[in-house]
Image (cartoon, rainbow, N blue to C red; front, side):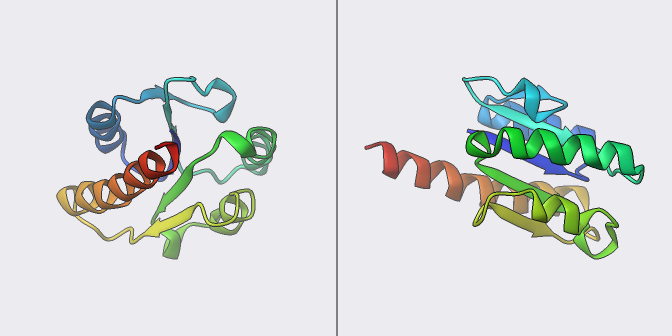
Length: 121
């Protein structure tokens, strides 16, 4: 499974990667066949957004979910949502405490992993 986290603190992303045995990478261009977690820090520079957008479009079929934290304050939210495959975009409040954020991410990912297992049976 390949998951993209946008705006999620690095430590939370590391904990999620460990829990789901995903490789941490910094761009969709580095997806690993065993499963990856792309951690994307908030971007404000148009060139960064364009690079991210192009990488997402190039690897669209490999993306299982994009989860954005802080949609309400994210200037790049529409770009991130636009380059996400339909039905694979999730958003969380940017006002969640670290423990709440991790719990919400786990709820989303547990449902995705369970869904993936049902499809593969």
